[in-house]
Length: 286
Image (tube, rainbow, N blue to C red; front, side, top):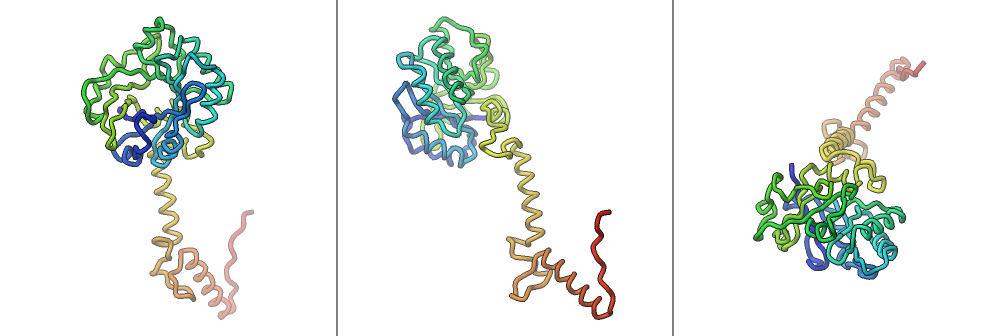
């Protein structure tokens, strides 16, 4: 299967409704965090939180510049990234492949891991076609003509746009900068895999800061929720208001299954006492 996501920044403005993005079927968002050693994208924190709130996988990216100090860029990016996957935007004015790896190393030294690398094929060719075989999560961009819905513009999983280069397969494809999404024209990306496979690529599968449920697939999480809900309802009654068929308590409220069991036990004890027969005691383990 193929899933779609969007790539946004301050250039798109602060008012993209990510709830609407999710309703339209998109599953992930890549958004700009910083650029160089001084620029911070003001839209990032709100988009990051909105992505989380709407079940979208989210990565924040730094636009790497060769004319700024590498360590300062890494520190700026990491200080602003927060709870999202990390991505480097390596293109115009980003320098050569040595600059790329210096930034990746600097980010890693600060305790974060670069998960995605946006490196357009045209820029790779411009800098001399270096080896990319160890680049994390390669995103390549080749745009189709026109504008419209992302699913209609997508050229397909067998397009040559997906062809690898520099010894590296393409992990995600940015195939348009004119997808009509939630009332905006934005960059759209495709991932030729499942939501869980993309989550793994982003390093989020076993993320401890997002809880143990992140280790489960969407289907497993839904199944667990439904089972827990069913158990809760059986114990507490519909909406937690007790079961009318089990009777009412002294306050006139429907009793729960647990209350009903306690009432039955009390009645058995009363009957036993009236007939001078000791009630049965629960068996204990030997």
